[in-house]
Image 1 (cartoon, rainbow, N blue to C red):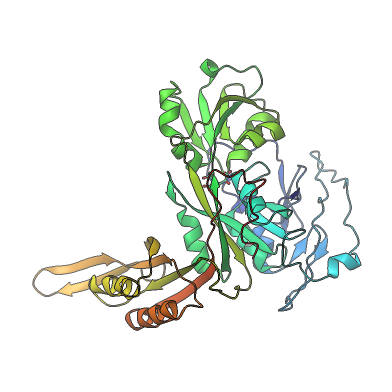
Image 2 (image 1 turned 90 degrees about the vertical axis):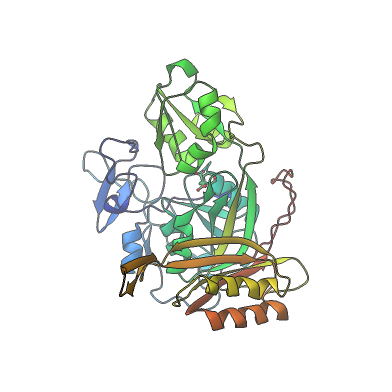
Length: 417
Ligand SMILES: O=C(O)C(=O)C[C@]1(C(=O)O)C=C[C@@H](O)C=C1
């Protein structure tokens, strides 16, 4: 898997920089807004999500087609952007490259050279998950989940691989919300064993540490082990695990450790103070693979289908009826998640005698173990539609059947949809 340039949000939209009030910011990256998009003095290329939002489609000097073709669109090459001189000189160290014939060829559908967006920087677990999902792909780091969604929508990437749940930390709610807000399809899943290390600058001893930084999920997954190690120090959230390691290294922080992977230690010149610090040795994160088009569901291997629905009727029986539509057909549910209904978060129910009751309204996300190609799944969904006011199939895709103990670098390359 080749590393690629990073896609970043502009200063105003970057949660790493916004509202932290002296918290963790990555001082190694000097922010500047140039020509309507933010660029940082770093080795990474930058695409602002603001630019993406207004549809400028400018990537490192290249302009993507405003209305991408439906099939086999050209995928533009990401090259390092011009760097911004700290003194304001703005001397570009690398100019935009001319488009080549190869840049105009249709996006490959399998494996090598597929451009896969993930959230984080090289060394993040999401990068590893992208490599498991699409061996040999070009992994494209993005600074936010939302940017990874947009990168696929704007044809800058062919796929996105994003975490949705962890065996210790639970659901990654942000991605559930984004799945609903965007129109991408789930085309596969990968489950990645997550093995955390405590990283510090070479020569730093544990006793000197006053702070541990990492992704909130990683901090949660190591909470008890850190305490058992006597590390009752400040724990601070960072955008991703590898980014935390990079930050400690770039700023020479000798009082701060990061929780990240051993690959992050190698990449950023950090020392592993402790290995395997997750609270459970079977710590696993599940990622979904997203694409612009759905895959054709099949029945020759185990499939999972993910749906989201809402109902506008009162009472709990709707949920019961929906779930029984699967139970009666012997379809196992593997996951159920509820999120606040964005457009109608509260329902007021007037009761003449007692007053006004206020109920929260929810969107329900359900994963079930069947392919949409199976009549029993189609019938279950037809029934669910009768009970619900809104129903969307997020995807029907092959289940990740890789043994948990397998070394993913040598494992069966899973579904490459
Ligand atoms: O920060 C990273 O390295 C990530 O890839 C993100 C992430 C997550 O969002 O859950 C992925 C896997 C681990 O559970 C910890 C963090």
